[in-house]
Image 1 (cartoon, rainbow, N blue to C red):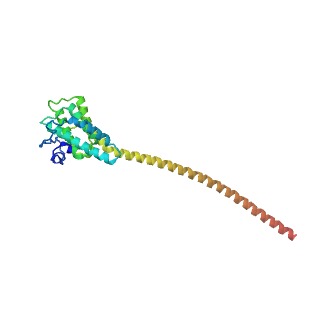
Image 2: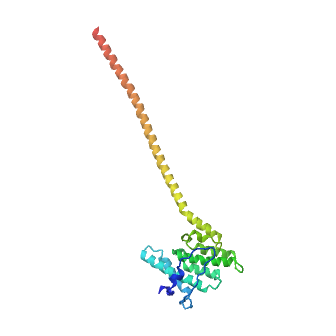
Image 3: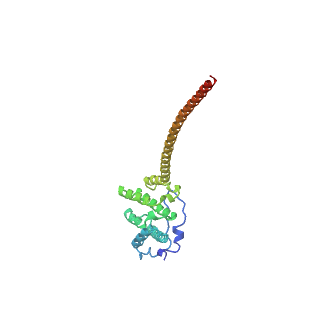
Length: 246
């Protein structure tokens, strides 16, 4: 049933939007059962929970089906948030529950991540603005909700906004540098392994050099013995010739 969502949801939810510093507000134009309250969002808890478990399955078919269920659930939750928007965003405790229900860390669709990011930007601006109920707990909750999104899938220009916790940019930078750190670690391990191999080769070369020195010394001794033998033979032949002449 396409999650009991309107048929024109594709154009309103997944439309490509250019990032900008100020939050982008999505307008909900059509209606569906979710809007009328006939289907409470809490109904998604069981289906999304089961889909989240199946998404970690090694079976390709089960994982693909789970991803589709999660995607529909995330669309429903985003639509629910935008449908309730009337100039103010919902309070952070309630938003946090819906955010956990959406299983955002499993989302890989850039459009959905971007739209969720825009909603969080607006919520953070409201929190920081006049009448905002700022407190350390709400600041931490906002950071955790931002961190639940796969922000690496968004363009860098999306983060040129003041409406997100400063730690979000630091975490994103850390995630971007993680592959470089892994590469450096691999290079260090490779260098260490090569050093061990070089040391082993040096040890073998030292052994061969010692053997060559022994052979050379033996050759010198043998040459000396040969020279002594030749001298002895020549002396013997000389004495033999002398004895014949006498």
